[in-house]
Length: 374
Image 1 (cartoon, rainbow, N blue to C red):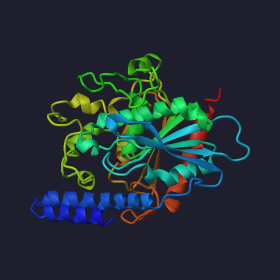
Image 2: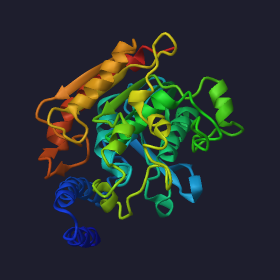
Image 3: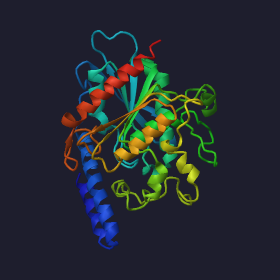
Image 4: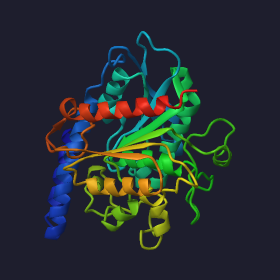
C-alpha cells in the first residue's frame, strides 16, 4: 500500500510540469483509479476462507492457460447445498480495471453472492493486463484470454457439477467489454490472430488436439447468456478520446508508459478496422444471419466513465438488429458498484449497492439458462 501511495505522489509531482488542462484531466483519473485500486488492494489483503459461504465450496487458483509464460488462474465457486440435483448453470466473471489494474479478487464478493443465492456454479477468472510482459500485451490478446477461459470452462466445468450447455459470461467495465467480445467475437477464430488486416482470435486455451480453426468449424465459442455491467462497448471511440495517452490515468496506476492498444506504429487513424474488431458496438449481426444469446445490460444513472447513453446505444443497436437484450439503469449509482467492499470516492458499498442489481441478474440468469435444460 505504501508503495502505491509513493508511486501516486511521484505521478502528481511530475504533473506540475504539464499543461493545466492535462493536469486536470489526469488528476480526475487518478482520483477515480486510486479509489478502484485501493478497493482492489483491500480485497487482496483479506483472503476469505476456502468455504467462502455456507453451502459453497471454493476451488482456488486453477491454472487454465499459460500464454507468453504467464500463468492465468481462475476460482470456481461450487454450490454444495442439500437439494441440488443434476448439473447447474455456469457464470464466468471477468473483472474490470481499464485492462491495466486489478485481478479476480476484486469480484470475490460478487462470486460468493451469486453462488450462495442461486444454484449457479461461478467461475472468477484472471487475464493478462496490458502492462504484462514488460508492457507488451496487446488488447486482442486479453480478449483471447477471456475466450480461452470460456473454452476451458466449457471443457472442464462438468467436474464441478456445472452444465457447459448452460453458460453465461459477465464482467464489469473492461471485464464487461471482454464478456461482450466472447459473445460477439467467439465465431471469429483464427490461428493467425491479429497478424493480418482480417483479424481473428486465437484463444489462450484450446482443448487437447484442437485449433482455433477446428473450434470455428464446430460452431465457435457459444454461450447462452451475457450480463454486461457498465461495460465498454466502443474501443474505437475510446481511442479517439485519447484512452491510449497519459490522459487515461489507468496507465499511471498500472505503472507503465502509455501506448497504443496494438503496440508501436498502429493507431486508430491508421488501422481503424483493428479497433472496430475489438468494439462490440461495431460487431452486432442481424438476427437473420446469427442469433445472439439474451443480454442483460446495466449501468448506474450517475456513471460518467461508462455512461448510460453508451449502454442505451448498444442495447438499441442490438434490438434494431432483432437481438434479445434488456437495459437496466440503476438510479443514484455510479461506477464499479459490483466491486468488493466500499469505495469512498464513489460513496458505494457492495452490501448496500450491489445486492439489488445482483438479485435482478440472478433472476435473469435463472430464467434464461433454465430455458436451455436438455
